[in-house]
Amino acid sequence: MTPRERNHFIPLGPIGDSIRVRIVTDGNEMLDFTVQYEPYIEDQHWPAVRYDCHVRPHRDTLDWGGETIDKRWMPEAISLNDSLDDALADIEANWERYRADFLRRRP
Image 1 (cartoon, helix red, strand yellow):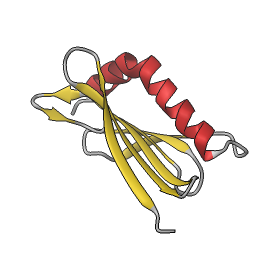
Image 2 (cartoon, rainbow, N blue to C red):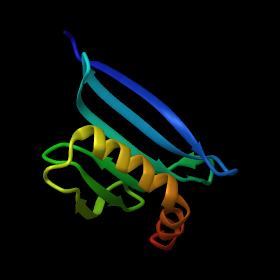
Image 3 (spheres, one colour):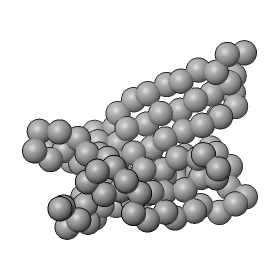
Image 4 (tube, rainbow, N blue to C red):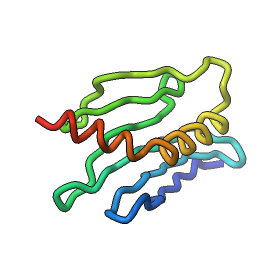
């Protein structure tokens, strides 16, 4: 089979913040994913927190230029499906804190 990439957004809160979700599958097998929290500030979305799975699933905290300032690794034995679910749950539960933290890092 040929890998298939799907992208969608999940809206958060009343001011336009969102979660960007990208999933790559081959049949029923997940090959890759990205889950990114993007606060809507000054008429644009900014990447603030990103989960992805190159090397191993992890969370990156990003600065205003999109550079990683902190990396938190997920457990080694976690499946990609579980890490995707955990990433979505974390951002949905903590996006307001992630937004406030991002604003505090403003240059």
